[in-house]
Length: 279
View 1 (cartoon, rainbow, N blue to C red):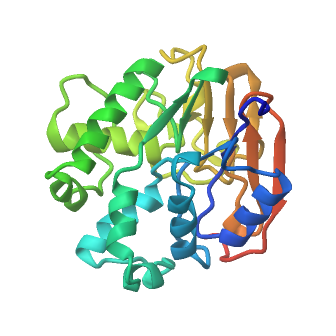
View 2: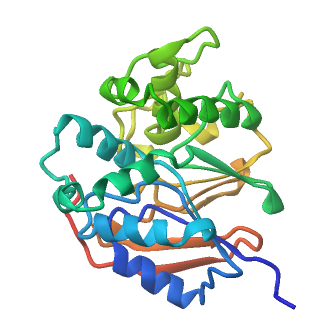
């Protein structure tokens, strides 16, 4: 008789394959009985994005890999050839199996519901107007586009900070972009509830009128346990008053790679050598 399935959520890997493999060794991760959820940003800035994608894909049904902003950037850059100065995606884009890996990546989800622990996992955050159920439905809308024949049009118009406020009447590219920006880029909200997509530092360094997305007073998703990544400068992992847990502990910057066992809440960390300098 096998023990109950353990489910490990792991923060932003960003191309740091060796720390991920060492973390899973420390956890005695067994893909036959355990499950791994990577909360987005599998690639970029670290030394081996190609290896991370190959490894994650090779886990098959034992892993759920969410899309983060760097993963979407990779999909867009594969179409338009535009890379940023600090991107470390050249080896991946030149690999013989790049098309296979990109196709696999394009079919990953934007959020995931872990029913045994009643936890919603996303890369960045949720809009305050959304319930957890609405967030999952909107994520599914965009996932269907990314997996379908219209994915090129979405990736070609992926970038932009507008619209910055949710309205159910949003449609087409504007609707898809707002959902993507919320689920993969957001950290702070302006005082009027608009997305503040420019702030990347810790919460106390932001404009005093801004607030972390998960502390918005009238959030419709309140009462839902959320696990996310994306925000390496947040400063701590747990915000129990909001039932949220941030797992991006800056692995690629020389911090740690963090895993949380969703059923027990136990945290395990693997120290990481710096791959890049922040800023």
